[in-house]
Image (tube, rainbow, N blue to C red; front, top):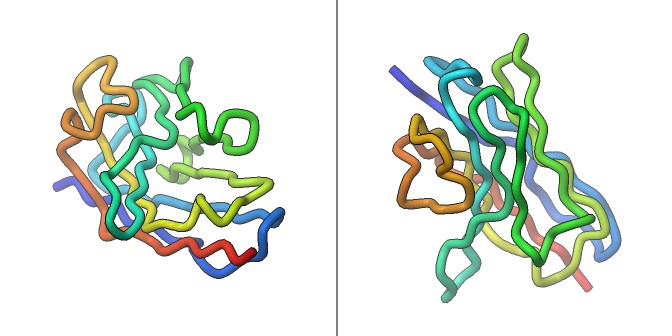
Length: 124
C-alpha cells in the first residue's frame, strides 16, 4: 500500500527558506516518479517540481526555477523540496504525489497517490 506524508511547512518571512519532506511507504524511487504540487485558495493546483523514476531528471515550474530544488534520499524513501528566496505568492498548501507513469512530470492528473498536504505561508 502506497502512502506519502508531507511535513515541514510553516510560516516564514519573504526571502526566507523552508525544506519540505515527503516520507513514503510502498514506493521505490526507481519505479515511481515523484512530484510536488501546490494549491492556493481560489486557485487551481499547479505542479511545482518533479523528479522522474530513477531520479536522473527533474523539472520545475517557471515560477520557482532557480529558487526551489527537488531531491530524494533513496535510503530513507524520502522526497524533499528545498525552497529558497520565498515570496508571498508561494503561499499555498503543498502536496507530494507519486506516479508510476513515465514522464508524468508536472501533470498532476498522472499522479495516483497523494498526501494530505502541508501549509506554507510566506509573509511580506
